[in-house]
Image (cartoon, rainbow, N blue to C red; front, side, top):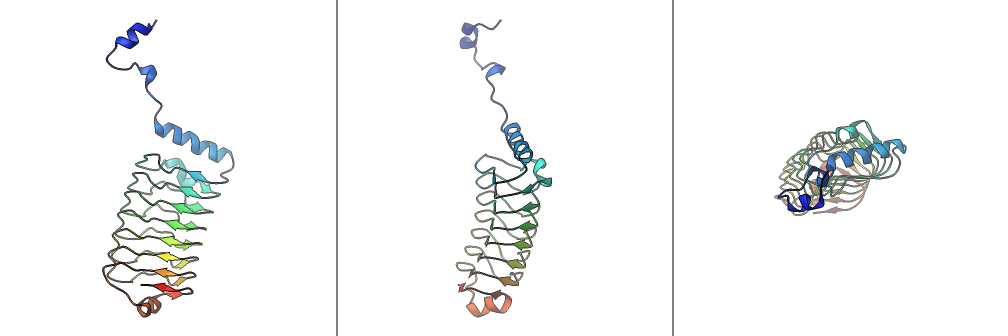
Amino acid sequence: MIKLKDILLESTAPDIFIPRRLGDRVERYIKQYIRNGSKGNLDLSEMDLVELPAILSNVTVGGDFYCDNNRLTSLSGAPQHVDGHFYCSSNKLESLSGAPQRVDGHFNCSLNKLKSLSGAPQHVGGDFACSYNKLESLSGAPQHVGGYFYCSFNNLKSLSGAPQHVDGHFYCNNNTVKFTVAQVRAVCDVSGEVFV
């Protein structure tokens, strides 16, 4: 029998006071989401995750998916289809390998350490934001963006790999090279305005 006096006098907490692992709680949360039909948003933001649980890779998210504001270095294990928006900004991503190949809403991978867009979804129904990274080119960017395209505040030296069509505005200001509107329109059919 454990006595309160013994617990108070111990230099370390006994096992009964060890909190449950965060990974177990995240996995239970995801399993509950799947049991509920994978409908609505799935929010894993600000959970101090260093990797995404493998259980996600076969899940179609019926709403928005949030994994922003963590410590992710990879999107390995991410859901492969998201009906809403996909937010993976403010992590430590150096690659988009493992990202969903189809996102019907917005895709935001800003505020990471990306040097390439290789692995990015090829279909994005809404905005595509990759600002505040270390990109030198747009190689790997989606071919069609249904909203705005943001690639400002990078190290872009070339527009190589830019989307073929952007339904909204195209933002590429504050890069290593100051591009012109004509240069952007020469590589991309932009329906909206171009901000350089």
